[in-house]
View (spheres, rainbow, N blue to C red):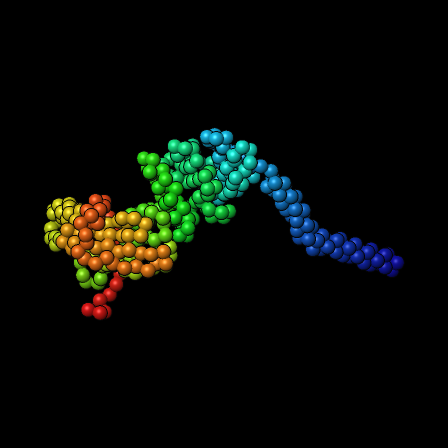
Length: 341
């Protein structure tokens, strides 16, 4: 009997010991996620502190341009071990040891961190204007005479497609200064806007061209509109281009049709001349439609000069450049219905 009692107590003690072991295991299992989270938190704090330390250090310079008059422009990238794509390239502008432009991000980059090809610098004849090019594309402009920089202030990057009017004007103005010296520079952010928008010499006014395609009507309608900065003042005139009819059923004639259409467009275009005669006078001339001119005052009030135009003015108009219009691409054509017809 005592032996049986002893075995029962041994069994009870075994169950208690097993329960304690299970409780300990359960406790560890419950604490494991907490311990893991705490460990991750400490790792992240250390990692963030390390990144903050690196952020306070100078960026990695990879190309410096020594410019006239004791000036320089340096391009930077983030440190290689710290870099997490996508990132940005930076630049600063220094004159006599003083930073005119602090480190400013200007271009988005991908996994390569630093582009494969080197950048190039072009300066104006007096050395007061510098352009930085990647291949043939202008990506930075700085005017030391007025201390203006493009791209604009912090956060306005080169590869932003939504340019403000002020961004556009500054870019055009600085590129025009190079063009006046015979240095034709290109910036892809302008796209075809260089031809779609025609600015007056002081950049206060500009002309925009808008193509419309009416449903069921071949060709395009061209609206020539006058703006003061971003405010539209008027539609100066409307004209139309009608393509020649071609035989679309004959595939063998397709290349010839394209050639004929291109030649027809060139002939139509060559009959047009348009541009600013001065800061306040815009004019257009067509062989069939004659010459027209509009004057705008500082407040944006505009008037069309009465016809016929006097001889000297007509001569100036006829000296304007030919072919001011470009054949519109599909996204540029505004589709309109013929509800009023």
